[in-house]
Amino acid sequence: MASAPVIWRPIIWLTLLALPPLALLLAASWGSSGWVWPFAADETMQRVIAELRLPRAIAALATGSLLALAGCLMQVLLRNPLADPYVLGLSGGAAAFVLVGMSLGLAALPVPVLAFAGAMLTMVIVFVLARGRGPWSTTRVLLTGVVVAAGWGALISLLLATGPDASLRSMLYWLMGDLSYARLSAWWLLPLAAGVGLLWLRARSLNVMTGGELQAALLGEATRTRFWEIYLIASLLTALAVSMAGAIGFVGLIVPHLMRLLVGADHRVLLPAAALFGGAFLLLADTAARSLLAPRQLPVGVLTALIGVPLFLLLLYRAARIR
Amino acid sequence: MSTSTHGSLVVEDLSVRIGQVEVVRDLNLAVGAGEFWGLLGPNGVGKTTLLKTLAGVFAPERGGVRLDGRRLDAMPRRDIARRLGMLPQHTHYAFDASCLETALVGRHPHLNAWGRESSSDRERASEALSELDLLELAGRSCMDLSGGESRRLALATLLVQDPTIMLLDEPTNHLDPANQVTMLNVLHRQVREKRKAALMALHEVNLATCYCSHVLLLYGNGEWDAGPSSELLTADNLSRLYRCRVRLVDDGRQRVFAVAGGAGGPGEHSAG
Image 1 (cartoon, each protein chain N blue to C red):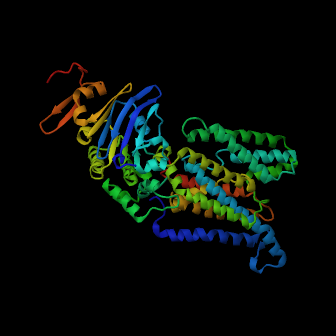
Image 2: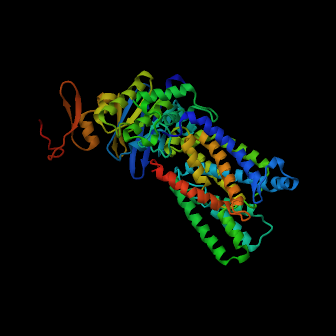
Image 3: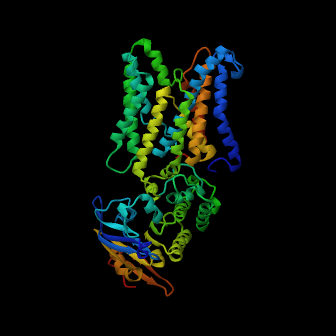
């Protein structure tokens, strides 16, 4: 059985469509001050919801979708269902730049700008170094990315060891993935949806690319162009997510994996399913992270990893077909 | 495009080299509709490389290939894929998909970016699966297949792609004798009834004598011979090709080529 039986499909899709709005409602109602029904809240509470909870919730929704989509693309790119948006060192680059900014006290440059610059620089480094003269090589891209990531990791350790104690806590939170300062107006969901739509037009090409370079070329794809196109889009999506929320792990790994089990490996259904579920998943996790131990706030990355690791191990243990 | 060149693959002064191996030198060849070519040669002579060159995914040293009269290297891949398909030597599936979905991927070059497979495409895929005795496996994951089933699924995908020129890299790999015959019968029908052209690399000389109308022999060092099977498939040519003594055995009903093995070695074969 390649995916869930056909009769379950409508139920799966209704659930996937209903999840993001329900998660938004929950995020608006639940917080460190307890439960409030948002449509019957007093004026103060309404301001809290409109100015604090909703912008953060929308940022969580967008970040989750971006990570899940980037995960789908990275998995096609590396032809491996276990690839993850951070494998190629993008979050490492973003984190290193942010930490340099924090330790130098560069208040003029906001964290998202630094993070985006770091991720894009990593993208260019991997792109230039991995682009040998031979045919596209998954291994070469993977090796380049992993080594670049290790380099950023060393730089991050150096910064943490020598950085001022005052900024250590915010540095650590950012490294773990944190949505506390993420704000996004609802208008941002429009370009995101447009992006998903454009990507969706390429979905059948993605299916063909999973068969490998030779097979894809024989079925009419300009494989080299397509390969770097996927790499650029996946990097861009990851860079956006990292710049909003730091290094949140496991969403890009778990969500595509789960969705493949539910709706199948066809990217025309996988991409929208992953975008919907990834957004809802991260939003639910973030709502729990800021409310469960109130008034303390957990970095959401810790929670996604705590959910993600056992879930992933379980899926891996049960999956007979991953080779 | 004139009708005379439709469904044809014309090779002009083609020289192909991979590493130290000279695959062919100045190859001239025209593979036309209704012709089933066998590509024979010893291991490592460059059969796969030649097929890839003819498919436009490997650059030749000199010369070129024309597909329906157009230069292959000047055609977009999508245009090539609608006319020419190839069964690669290995297929590897990295993600779970059903066999029907895998076969349907063959429609890719025929659909627009926003196009979806129609019901006739699905019918075509089911037909291809049933032709290769895979219909019961339509809903099974492509990652759960045996080597032989996987091979037949790859050919089903090629049939769904429906190109007029089919390049086949050892299609009978991993197949038992009955399935080898099934597969070659399917290919033979495609060539005969649908007026397609096929060029197939294979190791079984006797399958070539049964199915191929023409053969291309690669001797190594760039030397080659091409022509009708009846003229070229002789014990002498095959002995030269495989660098071991091959003889023709005729029991009155079937003529088969056999390697004259044994401890005596080549050249010492007794006239028996």
